[in-house]
Length: 165
Image (cartoon, rainbow, N blue to C red; front, side):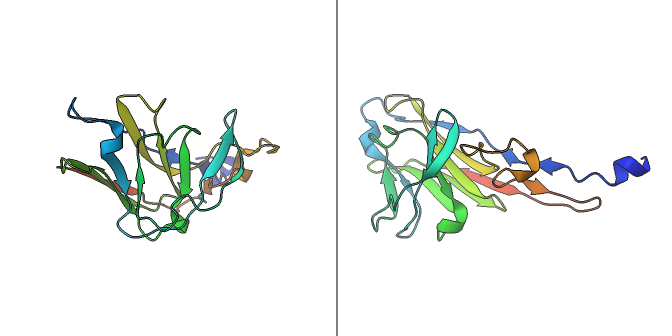
């Protein structure tokens, strides 16, 4: 590696893009499913407009430990800073059926929940270490929110587990 290459400090971000079919049973509706965080939470969601972050809402949990699907995505995707949550594990579960998909995340910064519409046959639950630009961002990759920069020889480990039952 050249001397020039050795001084590089490459910025990076990473994220998953898994989606899960809901409802599983054709007799159920999205109202029969929730995303459970295990404990009562208090966290706002990042607000997106035209693909840019424009701000953050007040608490979306209101003392609850879960978010019911139904019309959860009427205002678009939900991105939550994992630092605002008291857990790094979330579970998509059928309230009546007991079907579940559990996702555990380690060393990620955000959780993204979304579906293309409230009638889509799937929900995405994604661990993210990186975010879209904020409105007015200077377009410098190293200045993006949640971007990581590793100096030569450094490592950063991300892990994610998925349990289905």
